[in-house]
Image 1 (tube, helix red, strand yellow):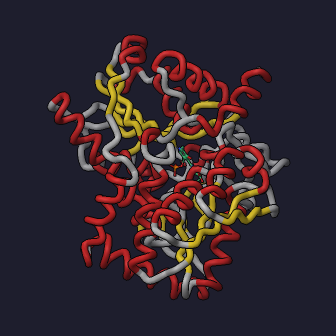
Image 2: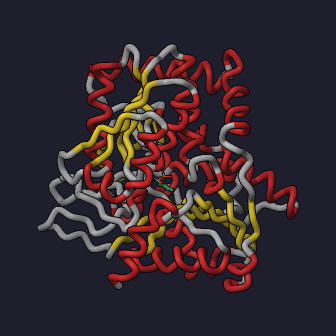
Length: 392
Ligand SMILES: Cc1ncc(COP(=O)(O)O)c(/C=N/[C@H](C(=O)O)[C@@H](O)C(C)C)c1O
C-alpha cells in the first residue's frame, strides 16, 4: 500500500484488526470478484446509479477556447456527484463482509449524501460525522442525508470541518469494528483505502476512455479534474496513467492566495499538492499544509469539497513523479467558472468542479482535445454562490 514514500498504515494498534479485515475483503471481493461482487457492484451502479454518465462535447466552451472540451458528466450520477461510485462500492463490500452498520465523514456533504443513499438502497444503518461549520454551509445535503434515513453526528471540535469529522469517524470505528464499516470519502486514509477508493472511482476514466475512442477514435490530449482528497481525480486519471501522451492535470483550491500566514496557523487555500510538505494525516503519509513546526494548518476554499489540508498519497506520488501536473485556481476564478458554465452550457457545476473548469481559462497547453471531469452539480452551492457573488 505504498506510493513512493507516501501511503502506509499509520493507525493506532486498536484499528489494525479492522484494517487487515478490510484489506482481506478488498483482495477477495474487489480484486478477485469473489461471489460475483464486482458484477453486482457494476449492475447496481448501472441500475441504481444511472451509469454510464455521458461524455458530452461542450460546443460553446470549445469555440471560446479554440480547443475541444469534453465534459465527463458525473454530475448526472444519482445523487449529483461522483461520490456514489465509491460509497456504493464500500457499502456493498460491508454487506459482503457481514457488517450491519455504516459510518462516514463528510465535508461538502456529497460523500455523506452518497453514503446515506447507498445505505438506504442496501438496507444498512448509517451515521455521518459532519463538522458544525460544514453543516451550516451545505444544508441541502444535510436534509438529503436525513431523508435517506442517516443519523447526522455534528462535530464541533476545531474548525468544524472535514479534518475533525474524519478524526471522530475513525475514533468511532476503532470501538465498533465488529458490526461497523467506515466508508471513507476519498483516496485518503490507511492502506487499502486509497487503492480501494481509486478502484471504485476508476469507472469514470474507464468509461471516458471508451467514449473518446468510440466518438473520435483517439485518446484525449489532457484530462483535467479538481482535487480535494483526490478521488474524482484518481478516478478520472487511472485509465490514462500509462499513456504518457495524455497530460493529467489536478486542479487544487488556491483559495484567497498561496501565501501561508505562519502566525495565524492558517492557510488561505487547500493546495496541498502545490505547497504542502510531507506528513502523516488520517493514517497515511502524504503531502499536507503545515507550518514550520509541522502543525497541520486549517485550510480554506470557497468550496467545502476542496477544503482539506491533506491529499491522497497516490496523487502526491504521481505529482512528485511529474506524471500529474498540480495547479491551483483561486476562489474568484472558480466563482467565475461556476457562472460561465451555467450561462454558456446550461449546466450548474459544483463549486469544486468549477476549479477544474476555471483552469481552462489559462489552459493553452492542454492540447486539442481536453476531458474535464464534472465531479458534481451545483445545487448544494446555490445559496453560498449568491452570497459570495453579491460580496464581490
Ligand atoms: C462534488 C465534489 N467534487 C469534488 C470533490 C473533491 O473530493 P475528491 O474528488 O475526493 O478530490 C468533492 C468532495 N466532497 C467531499 C464530501 O462531500 O465529503 C469532501 O468534502 C471531502 C472528501 C474532501 C465533491 O463533493
